[in-house]
Length: 562
Image (cartoon, rainbow, N blue to C red):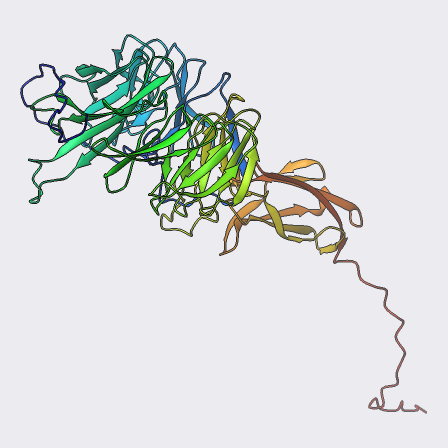
């Protein structure tokens, strides 16, 4: 049924809610990558520029398979779950900040609201809300759970005001519950709709600002989601939801595709992506097609690939649509359904694309590689992980200046989980720190008068040198130089100076110095280098030639005494 049709399907669900309540004002900050697909429209796109080389920055071992995609909080924490039942929060440098025991496997990708609350589903049928990184003292603690009574694979989505949380269940229901930000009724049911037999997909949300005066009166909000019907058919719904859950809770099915008279489609596990203007929605199907519908549910076009399309579409800034297929190819289709380009990988693709600010497409394949593909379909780079890359990558935030010099690595890190039981962080080629200068240098001969001075400058041209990581050994003994910060446009690091008395070495002896230093990833890139030189004493003087006696002509002649 189509929006505006005379046969409008008027299925509504009401749930009694409390009288209108005041919503507290809290300090908020938008997450960097809010949920599966990056945002409520699930277009998979960010304005951040992703790393331009396929080099691993760090990886974190979870102990079990990881199928969900991470979300990235406003403070840069990378949040995701694992099939071992734990939910993890990692720092941007790969350190474990905290973990939460969800008891059952977590395949649902998390959603993070602007107050840092994290929502995700689990295999025990519970949807969890835990405190995120905005409240340091309580982060990773449970706020509440909601019993959905069946497994939740779907990634939750929040509405425009972050009062409602939408998700699908394995028994085919679309459920809305009140979020942590809705007073008095947090974590309770708002409404539920039975849409099919199973829902793996994540709901997309779109707020349509239709009021010309800016008043919310007359605006509408839509949730779009696909479902499986049996083993061979699928369906996609457009559901109008309330724009003000404080006064009413209403969900009305406005469109169904395929409708009566339409050809059937295969099961839909692909999540819907909504176009930037809100006029079109895109999704894949197990029948091998990428579909485009109008926002009111009418078929615009379909593009046939060579395999099932479980990958969810991403949308380039140009409006072109990108999706992976189980035939092993990535397809880019324009807004009329014509192929722009395709890119072949070595295995089936179930991963969904992440798209950076230059329209580079980041996507995984079951050939064990993560790929970066340009907007014209050329490979930028690929990275080989330990096993299949089923999950969908996400893109972090580019480092910015905080009053000091700009970071040397200025592109955003890419994160993805894999079937190798790890979360991987991809960044620029972060080479190890290196010596800018040494005095004395290897093989030199230095000169000392009782007190020798040894100087080294160790820098990195892509990130900072970790001051705490620098270790110096002089003749095998741990010593403690003084340090001075080095800051330049092309590199940053530290100048170390060590003074040693001549009682600690022998003049003319070959002296050995060992320096260890790491970048700010600590263990990822380090230098461990030994060099040697000799020290001569400046007090040793060459022997002087004997002086020639000279007659003083001004001396008076001796007087003879008689």
